[in-house]
Length: 285
Ligand SMILES: NC(=O)c1ccc[n+]([C@@H]2O[C@H](COP(=O)([O-])OP(=O)(O)OC[C@H]3O[C@@H](n4cnc5c(N)ncnc54)[C@H](OP(=O)(O)O)[C@@H]3O)[C@@H](O)[C@H]2O)c1
Image 1 (cartoon, rainbow, N blue to C red):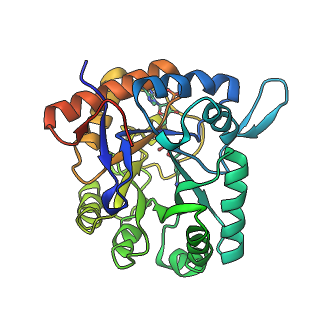
Image 2 (cartoon, helix red, strand yellow):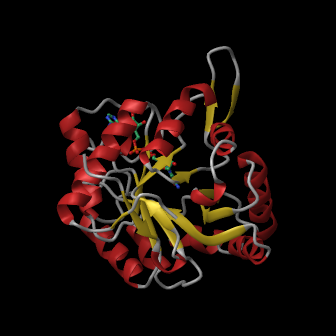
Image 3 (cartoon, helix red, strand yellow):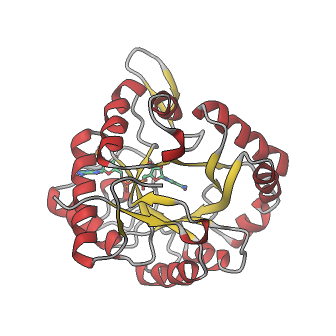
């Protein structure tokens, strides 16, 4: 089987596995632990988190997904792991507080990538821009290594190109243009990503499978909700599209079982072996 490959996230120089484990998957820490454990064994070193990603357990327990990540981090070498976290707060102090909360929640003393979360319009950008000050303050204090934003739209992927302080971008990309808020086509998103990539930004993607709805006939815009089942051919086609995009350093994928993780890693590795892009390495970072 081809090996999982790694990419340097633009000028940040941070090396990430091409597959990033998404944590908005509504699994309890016990259910998620085997996925994280197997991810580490397969060489995955990149984990995408947020304080708003939560779970509810059968026995009435509930909590935040990062509890599973915190437990997993205790058994691995932190310096070999790349953590992304985010804030929905538009204020400098609120964003800074979310950095501090993330450090506590994840049980670490730094976050590699800290992002403004889910900005989709130019109005969002103007409203949330002050939060960058809090993120940059955290960066000055060594609590955060790099800052950026996540978006579903071509509009903001293009806008990000005008703001060099955004070092890392998480954008929506999938084969059919689902969950892109009707802001443009996948080809237009790829064009915006190309600019960012060529500017030296770190670029990773989400919504590769649109939570299982990537090949639905309906024009869906809601990204949340229960995932829908996909066939192996659908997963191969959808992830094949994303991993063939030369402008995406990695893709964060919601994987709710070890079997899904193994399948997704195998597809990424096979596509990368075929294109010959990215680095083969025994270890990341
Ligand atoms: N910044 C933002 O605005 C934002 C928003 C949303 C998500 N995210 C991040 O992106 C991550 C990915 O979330 P997403 O919304 O983009 O979801 P996604 O990765 O498009 O879809 C995830 C779903 O796909 C299914 N799946 C994965 N591998 C599969 C396989 N091999 N075979 C069959 N089905 C498979 C799983 O559903 P089943 O278990 O039902 O099979 C899984 O729950 C999140 O966890 C989060 O870290 C960020």
